[in-house]
Length: 157
DNA sequence: GCCAACGTTGGC
DNA sequence: GCCAACGTTGGC
Image (cartoon, rainbow, N blue to C red; front, side, top):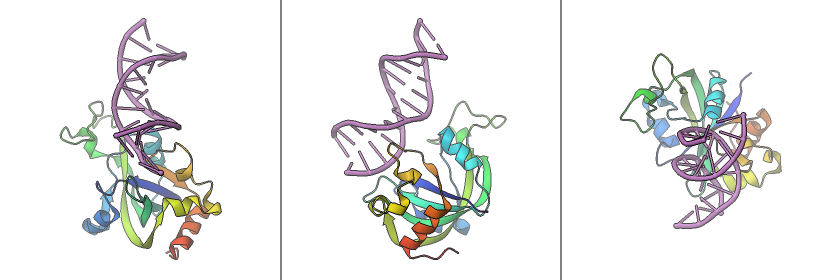
């Protein structure tokens, strides 16, 4: 019973195309520094579906679909003093931050813009659309996942 | 443990 | 660039 998630990124920083261009079309989802988002990642299982969302771009949109290919493990950037994600309070003995690996499945033929999602009554309960919801990792219900694929004109698997 | 100040996110 | 809606920090 796969679950579904939405993960946000600024495309200038790491885009869906960057994921597709990564070795094996895979990458670690580094840099999450929010406990709630971290806890969601801890709940992810291999095979879970991921909506890859581009934020802080015009227009904001879901760009593609990915899958979880490795479950949560410590994010190495927390120990790296040269990284923008460095956390002086984290140690390998007591890591604070986790990440998962995801693999690009497919780019959406047409990006699904935030406006389109907002305007769809079937998606009115989406965590992404809740006011003030700024988490970079959010759960997506099965119904929402199916509806999104339908809107994107993509069959599930 | 409270809460004010501050920083960040992210749509607009 | 603005600003609402958070989360985090740190003094007390």
